[in-house]
Length: 216
Image (cartoon, rainbow, N blue to C red; front, side):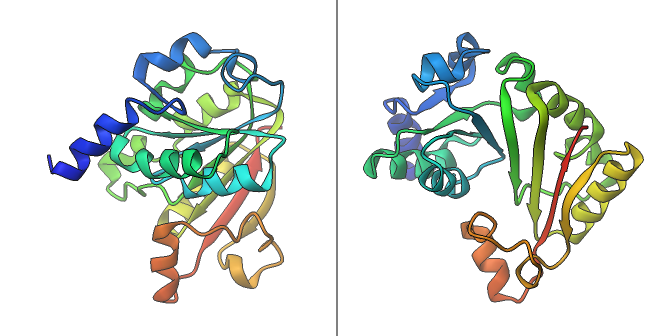
């Protein structure tokens, strides 16, 4: 492991806005009241990477709480450090495997979910690792409040098409859907937040796909 990664892992151990593994379990069902010290809605960003989306959403919506979830601590470090440096207190990061969400969040505890540029897991053998595989969708349905929505933003056309297929198979309501986000009517202030990787894709004129759906 490189010196930078080791330094970052050591540093996030000192960050109050980063909870690692079992540290988040006692907050299940009480994230708003016990961690954020308020009763505001909670929004998750799954596979948050460097946390750009979570941090920027937190800036736009100071009346909501945001939690970026990822297992790679050296990536989380960037978003957590930015939040500390800029005094953004309504965003935190949880370092866990996403398949373990139900160990950390109570049924109906989450208002909205964002999945921004996840690993598309293109191999058929890794379908169950895709974050819109039905096994994951079932977990999202449990932790989301009634009417809570899931947003997927991705450059990967295959993952986008796969997600559409699964949403249609499950007969889930689709609220927004486009395979060219920035030429669509949906490109508002929220959807125009760009991650490090999205900026790279756009430099190569890659289309950005977006779908928003719910479970009722």
